[in-house]
Length: 361
Image (cartoon, rainbow, N blue to C red; front, side, top):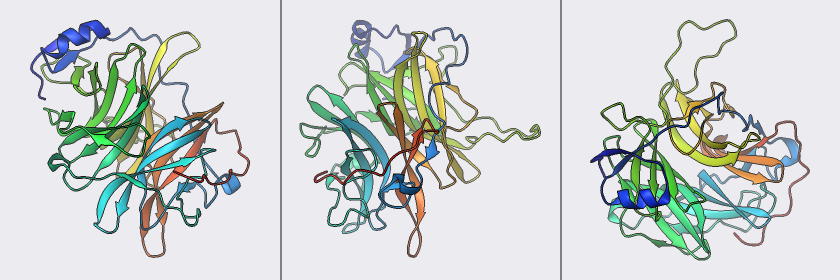
């Protein structure tokens, strides 16, 4: 899927349909930005004390399973969480599913005795290699579509019940000039267009589709000869002012999580949380733009920083609250292992004790 041509696009569903067969890279035209778009999300604080069923801020943990790469999907009054786990029988990474009625007490967590989150997807296609990662669920009609990453790119599986999935026979996005795509995040626009963000080569990129299967890459800057990223690493700073902290994403970017909202001024805000890497540390960053096209503008301040190697953000909106789920490192009986923890915004809000664990995943 290497770029063949770079064409300006207005993002209408009709024009995209006409262009799909002709090229594999679409150009974009940015809406003029009046003021920075990077507001309206976070900062998040860690869950604490009795706000979790186990040890805060961890909400879905198991030392043998090593849960990580969470992806949230609202369902009814609760939330489904798709995540990567280690299958100890074969020593391979698979994708599992759990749920919580309150956003915190997840089926199959370490303190939910007798329950185990079921495996819903494992590597069994040649292109996938041995391990799966980066689950990204999306509701499409009466189905759940689950995008995910394998060795050679991004795949798609579909389900009626969210537990039994049927895969596409081939990946829906493979390596281009930017590298092998991974860590997908997908949203479905009101006009029926699918918007896919992904990581490749330590930068974030975008692709789009009219059917959710056949994607074309988007180029936010047609003035350059090659495909441009939506967001690249920050430039290092050497001459810091007193009290100023260095950028938190100077080494690499990964794990985009995309959402949209309409601002109080009536503008569409395209919002992306991501993992920033710098000097062996990771932090959750936030970038955004106004409108459906163009490069992202980053917020210089972290959206979430826990000092626990946080990565892989996903969010769940519950009333006036916004839950943030991330992979975190936790000290185990012998070694540190990955698990899933939670943050909350607004940071001034405090939660009552969690609800009972669900009876099913």
